[in-house]
Length: 74
Image (tube, one colour):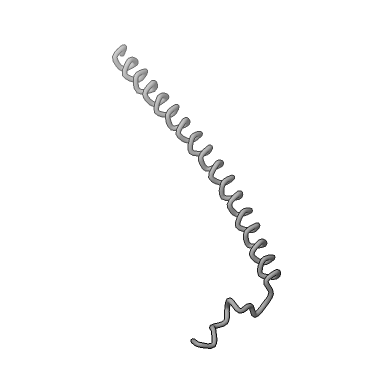
């Protein structure tokens, strides 16, 4: 009986240790996902600013610029 109780105690302790490790891993992964999500949102804002800047520059340059037209000797 004592051996059974000792075995059960060891198994419970092992399970508790594994659960603690899984809980730690889950917390770490959750933090990583949160950081990555913040980075994705920052990059999306930067893309929007870049697109707005491109539109502004295109408006300043105007349509039909000579840069998009082949020279006569082509």
